[in-house]
Image 1 (spheres, one colour):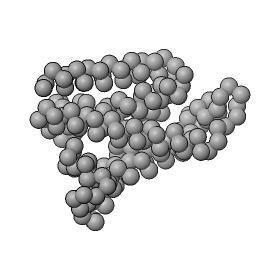
Image 2 (image 1 turned 45 degrees about the vertical axis):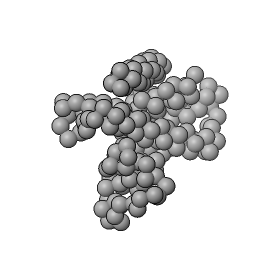
Image 3 (image 1 turned 90 degrees about the horizontal axis):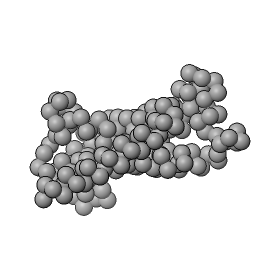
Image 4 (image 1 turned 90 degrees about the vertical axis):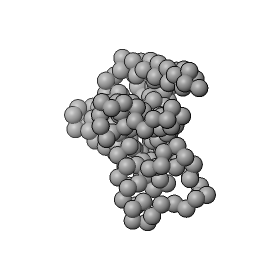
Length: 183
């Protein structure tokens, strides 16, 4: 029923916007960092998915993640893993490099607690993978809501892009997890 879709959308948007507000008040750099992770995860999923799906063909029915096609026919297992790799590489290497380039002290600020001890590499890898997975999950949630409503795009404002919500859907889940880590 449309009312349940409206309620689900309202809960998702308000909880993620509340988290965005909290993270932005802590530091704009945290907000920008998360957006870079999410957007590069989306880009990696798109590029790798298209390149390898065209080259190797679509997955057969019944494969591990064939349920992706039920939510969005253009999703592929290649894109799923491409998104994780691109998002994780962004979190582990690009963001520290960008902030270090902008402000020499930012790398320490971003990756350390107040005692200036770097977290173990396994923590950074774990967080990078979790944020990438949550970005993919946010995209799938928005796609499934559109499918339940019988819509291909969330709006017509950005033709060819799936609408305004497709620009930020991947951040819906990631921002909530990221906010919890900042506490």
